[in-house]
Image 1 (cartoon, rainbow, N blue to C red):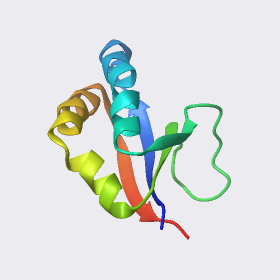
Image 2 (image 1 turned 180 degrees about the vertical axis):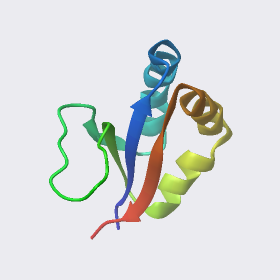
Image 3 (image 1 turned 120 degrees about the vertical axis):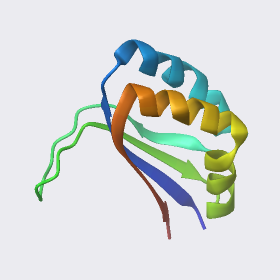
Image 4 (image 1 turned 90 degrees about the vertical axis):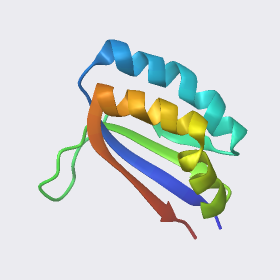
Amino acid sequence: MPAYIHGNIQITDPALYETYRQEVPALIAAHGGRYLVRGGAVSVLEGPGQAHRQVILEFPDMARLKAFYHSPEYQRLAAIRQRASTGTLVAVEGV
């Protein structure tokens, strides 16, 4: 069953975030993941939340998603992302 990471990210340091943005695609691909959404126009249709930069990644299953997220290589990049932005990441199984 596919699994997804949904990110709602507000970039606070564009120069530092660029480092993350340049390095993470190869790591996502190495774990069997792919981008479904990466930036682009966004608008909130319902609810009080604010939409910022949206990212949706698809992985073959939750085990591969978690292997990606918890890998030492991604944790190094996650630390960069966390210094350069605020937001949320959610993992969800698909159908």
